[in-house]
Image (cartoon, rainbow, N blue to C red; front, side, top):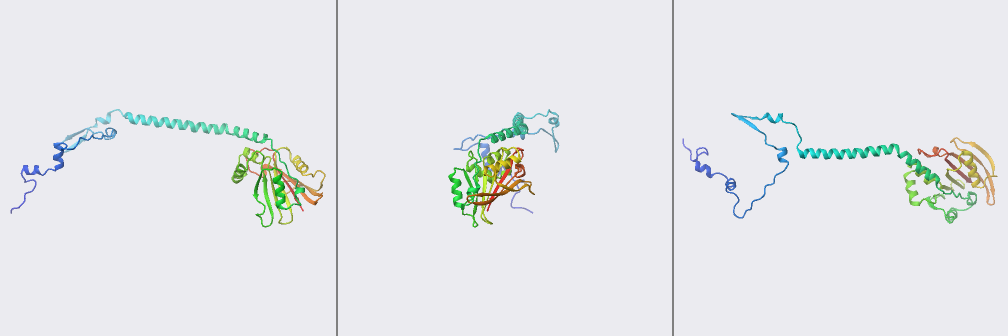
Length: 302
């Protein structure tokens, strides 16, 4: 049996050589006319990570040379420098973290105490308004009177926004802007540091006017000056002209407030009043508040 074609193995040597690819032939001849020699890019790390391994071939079996296993285990210079740089960076970051941690533990309480003392030492006055004089006024007249007194005011519930009447306004310390105070109130007094809480509360008061069930005005503030609950009660009564007012009730209520209550006659009518005082720490859960700070409430009603 015969075949019309020859297998590659049976083809003449010249014919087999003619079947080599043009690419291979071109590689042997070098660059053709018009082509330029291009530099060969060599990765400097290839020699480091792709080093040719020594082998020994015996018959059809290739054996790797085990001599490399016995050579000293040394890092290449580049890897050694990179590792050293990483160690230095880690040491610097660790030192900074340790310093900040030690500073937070040892010095932060001192800084907080100094800031608290600065807040307490500020010379700001309460300038409490006369509630008996405000009682006969309507909301607009009352607010205009407070504004004319020169107070820095923050309207929590502006006049005219409550369908039942009444409003709520905060008189701020003279050295605190409305913007700063607004951020503190939005943050929440309980979430402030003791120093910031004192800075916000000292020299401030909140007045709440209600028309829902009769007419009443409630004034609240923090007392950092009196030193005792009894003195805080007497100081509040003196500020409202109640030193000689009739006291019909006094004691400690179910909430822990020490209070005095009674009636007072004025040119505009007779009003019921009540003054109550409790430790400031019972109202705000803030660590570091002074033990002699008190929360005072004064209420007039008709």
